[in-house]
Image (cartoon, rainbow, N blue to C red):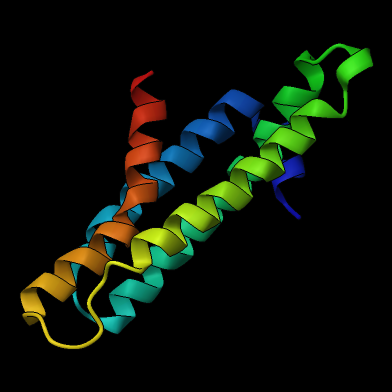
Length: 125
């Protein structure tokens, strides 16, 4: 709800950089096995995702020709759905019964940390 106003005030490129920095800031919180830190990390990732979802759609709609103006929104939400399916499939491999506790911790932490790598990749590129 606030991403549009923030992007108007500070500019879209700066807001995308801020979103990526929020994702990187969440990285250490997601690695700590304390529920309070985990909640902080997930909230930071949520803010980053919310900013990204609004600003990326704005960028795509501005760059797309009118005759295919429907395509960016369609592809964006298709990619979100595919991301959810892929995350669900990764979640199938997390052992629920048996296995060592270290193995369980490393697998679910990997799933939580994946968005941080996306933010880092976009900052580098």
